[in-house]
Length: 71
Image (cartoon, rainbow, N blue to C red; front, side):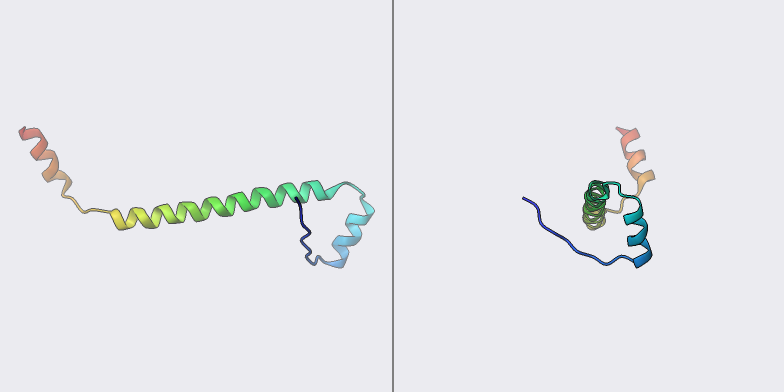
């Protein structure tokens, strides 16, 4: 199922689009789908990063390495 989304564009852009009667709706739809995917991905990455920062533990790496070598 589809729906309509309306937005304004500059008049000169509309005139240029009318002079070049290519099927832009498919290209615009594909662009919007791709852009929405990118935005969703960025939100997911930000959520993962914020969760990772909360889990961040502080450890003394040299101390851990020495302990491992002594075993």
